[in-house]
Amino acid sequence: MSDGMSKATLPGLAQIRDEIDRLDADIQALISARARCAQQVALVKQAEDPEATVFYRPEREAQVLQKVMARNEGPLHPEEMARLFREIMSACLALEHPLRIAFLGPNGTFTQTAALKHFGHSVQTVPLNTIDEVFREVEAGAVNYGVVPVENTTEGIVTHTADSFLTSSARIIGEVELRIHHHLLVAEGTRVESISRIYSHQQSLAQCRKWLDAHFPKAERVAVSSNAEAARRIKGEWHSAAIAGETAADMYGLVKRHECIEDNPSNTTRFLIIGTESVSPSGEDKTSIVVTMKRNQAGALHDILAPFAARGINLTRIESRPSKNDIWTYVFFIDFEGHQDDPRVREVMSELDPVVSDVKVLGSYPRAVL
Ligand SMILES: C=C(O[C@@H]1C=C(C(=O)O)C=C[C@H]1O)C(=O)O
Image (cartoon, helix red, strand yellow):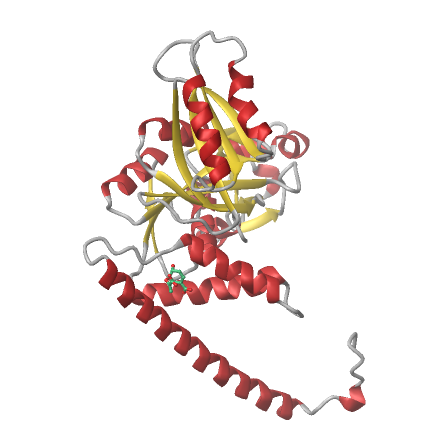
């Protein structure tokens, strides 16, 4: 044993189990006490704002998780411990107000996995067919929050999500990152030699391009609306395979013929949580803005970036897209560290104003903890 306990000094199995039973009872009593505190918090929030009570507070949840990780002493990994607390908070919040979370469906997509990673499992997830619908349902107040993919380390920006922000009033209230592992799935009984068609989402086909070239150069690659849809399709097709993740494999009872076939082993997708409220500072925040450049202005990009550089504000992403209003004009999506209430960030924003045609804050939100 690594911590110096030899067999001779170990207590007996029954004794250790008695100790575990005692600890479980203590943990359970403490979780119940915590849940009662959360109920009291809900009453205070309701008293403060009876008309539009907002129970979910992303900045507070991020702080709770950061504290859990900082004080963790093992043997559990800090992220594992934070995941347990993630679920406790999710259950506490659901006591008052089970959140409805729209995501890019159907059930079994990576976006659903991302939603559950961010909010825990005590929420109701609502699958929608398109990114547009997720934005619309959030704006209409039909759901509390929405989850949409925004960028992938292999394939880059999800243009549809970026473009939706140009016309939507939805705000970014959080982010979540997910390591994406793809598997080649088949229905039970499908022989690998007979596979002539492979279904997946276009992004996933791209993320596994080299593997497919090497292993299935002759198979037809068919892009469908989601990985989960690919998994659903092959249930009855003995000559077909799908590329999708673990959840879709379980959901449709498929066999994993080859695991982790993504070309880049650190393949990661970042998702955004969208809502209608603004979020208070957590201390570890990011801000996303979209800037419309003036037309044909020399040095425009330099003018936009200079105020950030002058204050040592770290940019985490910059992406240009065609503006939808005028040909050959562009918008820049810029993510940077800090909250829009920080004095330094306020200064940057006021310096940007005169040099650009428009600047819109999409939101300030806690940096992903898990
Ligand atoms: C209890 C609160 O409300 C919710 C539940 C939380 C928790 O269980 O710790 C944290 C933030 C909120 O989403 C709070 O705001 O403190």
